[in-house]
Length: 458
Image (cartoon, rainbow, N blue to C red; front, top):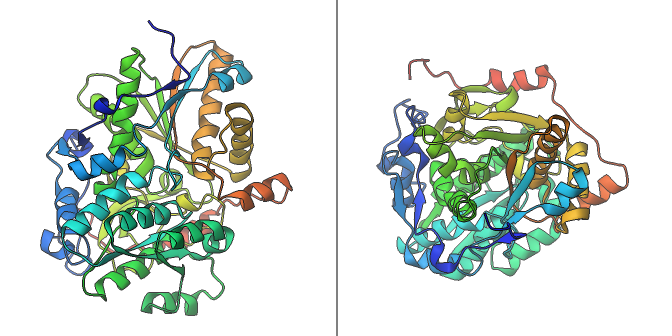
């Protein structure tokens, strides 16, 4: 076998031309979205009042395994894709582990993350439909940045509701969005009915992704010619993000490498779902076996401490009900620095896979995450985003287990983006001011007790 280079790049001609829809190979399909009023599956017509028409088709399609990536999107992808798969030789040496560690680096674009893979797709379909613009929410700011770039490319208006604690912690991320022409509003805001209610009920709140989603949806349905787009959770987003896993698999196959463990950070599920999809497809079809690990913050542990139930996707309870691992839509996470992981629920696709025992989940504390981030930065030369650093932490843990046992396992993790807009978080860590928050059972019970009453047989 050829010596594995530090960075494995695919040729432009080797880029995926189709997205992979893992739902097509799932024996147990994700439960359908429900209309909260009727408790019946949402129809395409109902969803098209909020989402773009072709995106609704993708959302409801759980049978077609491969869906063509339009030429216009593939042409845009070429500006920053294929992204490199990196062999972490320096990290391996530092750890003294026999494990072989690879990471798929998605931060080599101006948005600084994997989010652009779906943002450009959703903007394309909005433009194709003849819309004026789109609305969205953003936590860490990576999705908002990516969508503002995509909208600028297609000449669409972009309105972003940014979670308050991130809005205040990351002013430069906000300014990148504005540079690309987006209108950025702190959430909860006084510009929507949902926002005003949240401010009245929780004065001084740092906000949440669930609340920002509610505001963005309200803004979309209140303005003619607009639709709402989401950066994670939805099946359509995992579909677009499958380009990550497809490239990763193609690069590994090029050198005859088969991973044992695949690790990704998990907030709503876009990065993890995209990374593992083609590998999970092989597992579902009985072709190969892999160990998948979802890593979430201990402060917002939807998979590891949540319940599998139907819940609202948003705090304002204006969105459809999704069956997922959830902490309850009213749960307000602590303002930890991994803003992109501060969501009360998890993708219905990943929730079903987790419930079927096809993947694992662990939660990690914030200070330990930043220790891993610092170690990685010092030996691999990339300052990782706090979200990505959750995957780094567990990849290091697994590599150290290999050191103890002498096993030469191959570990792949997703490096979702860079942390250059997260310097406030790094400053707190370096100053010893960072703290860990783990919600008590009583804290979680409040959110879970508020779950909507949906019959168990649905």
